[in-house]
Length: 348
Ligand SMILES: Cc1cc2nc3c(=O)[nH]c(=O)nc-3n(C[C@H](O)[C@H](O)[C@H](O)COP(=O)(O)OP(=O)(O)OC[C@H]3O[C@@H](n4cnc5c(N)ncnc54)[C@H](O)[C@@H]3O)c2cc1C
Ligand code: SF4
Image (cartoon, rainbow, N blue to C red):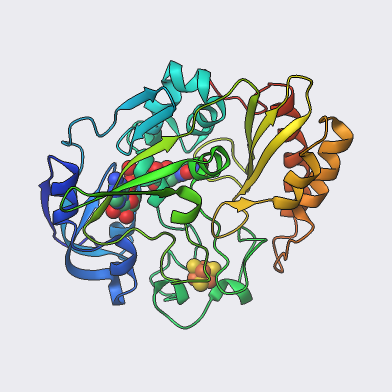
């Protein structure tokens, strides 16, 4: 049963940061997640779930919805600034984002379900906690919740990581993160004094090599304020694809974002191939990108890149099925990007 908590709202990013005396990961590493501290809440989709499941019990929640312009999208000459409070539905529907960053709009349009997309925010999506079923069980206090054991390694790990899975085998749950890392997005974090720090999302989302109880480096008294997207030049092509057991109302089993920078003649100047639902943080398939750079992309090149994308995988006992899934998805997403198609375009 959910424990009683106090509810306040903040009217500015610095006021929210000032009130946020703790963060979800810090509280969940304590027994029962009970804390005297205050945690910020955006749409509440993940936070309230954790509270209802008895995994988190903060004394106070701070709502972010009253912050002016927290959900604004500003198209800048050198890219775009997305307020952390924008909903996935608004992101998917924005004509400017659909035109400039179609893979991001498609990923937002295809995540979760229409009801969830209308409430869930960009910031909350990037900061949601992992879906590992042992992590989400009150009866399994695993490594990531401050315990001493990973239950997934000897247990049912069919949905778990195929890369970087030696210590903790979660997959990062955010669909948007997969595309945003491929695009080279930065996050802007604001503190209680109104100061900001800006860093690449790929650096912000941390793999298990560091503190195992958290997936990012957000600090108490700090909030995620905005995401900055780089400019899109003439030769940029992008695509995002996913496959899951269900088309909606579920997280994907595998997803891929590809961003290519093509010369006028079609030769690939630069490439990012990022795998989601594959590792504890969005996984950069460096060897796949190497297969593409300097080449004109065709089926043969995409097939070689797809094989390279999974060559370093270390599947667990139950998740070997992800390898052919990723291989096919990488090949198709590269071809979709190169041909300017949106492979899984769910844009409506
Ligand atoms: C059935 C189902 C299917 C789903 N499918 C998908 C899917 O396919 N892909 C996908 O990516 N997600 C999926 N989700 C997850 C959903 O998208 C996230 O739970 C949601 O985006 C969280 O956003 P929120 O605004 O509700 O965050 P909240 O629940 O309010 O917050 C989540 C966390 O972020 C922190 N937080 C939120 N905003 C800020 C901020 N600005 N600064 C600092 N901290 C902040 C909160 O303290 C909390 O720890 C699914 C969820 C459900 C229930
Ligand atoms: S995979 Fe990570 S979250 Fe899941 S049981 Fe192991 S340590 Fe916990």
